[in-house]
Image 1 (tube, rainbow, N blue to C red):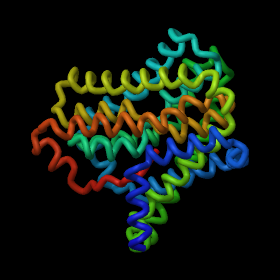
Image 2 (tube, rainbow, N blue to C red):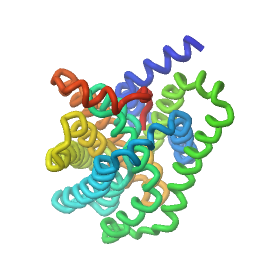
Image 3 (cartoon, rainbow, N blue to C red):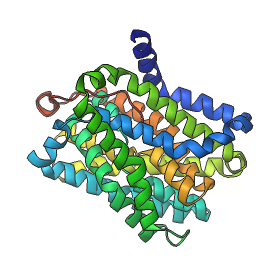
Image 4 (cartoon, rainbow, N blue to C red):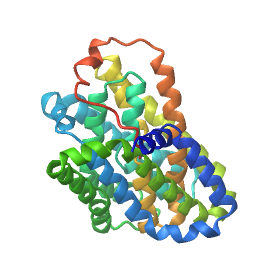
Length: 327
């Protein structure tokens, strides 16, 4: 078990490196990875099941005690990122599938990797976890409706089918994880340190499957999509922080909202795009899976060197231990 925990910690710590390496191999030798495409939904369900195992009642406590920062942050996420993606896709003149895929990336909830980045950035971890949890629970309704409104001009959107997909790959696995933790708390507690390894492996397989299916598309549109994803991420980080400034929140909450808004559940984006739009539409989320895990550590390292009032984080982060998981 000790060995597995060590490997799991290394896998989580160097997640971006593993993703880049596997993506490069899948791009160079795509054939062995092509059959993995049929397992994308199952693999994402495994990641979400792991999230359910790590959730605690305290994760939702902040929503009831201090709802304004949480609700405002979630609203900012579901407004800034989809609209930002829509504007970028329109201005850059992205092809229909890529445009819809970028809006889809902007419409999914925050990912659990953002919680680790907020912790490293000396942000308000309790707020970060609460935002991730609430946005994930709202996703079955919010994501399909946002896509219907913003991406319908590029590709047909079936909100009901997408609602069912999100329930299947997010809500049901998370619920199962919560139930299992309630029934077998001791066993689950002992296995928590291995969850990052399982999550990393699942996301890496998803990325390799989509990259192998998009070799031609990456060759022709890779730089265009990469530029759009980077711009989208920077926009989210900046406007998320600006939201905290406008609300006159303290520095730790500004950092939490910035990272939560800027980092998306790219794994969900890949699964939904592949199932409802096609493999090309999954490309923005695949690139985001790599880029968000590069930009996140960069901004976290920068902020970790900037002092913040310790009182802003000590009490609000009580009971939270960030899991080295991925999205």
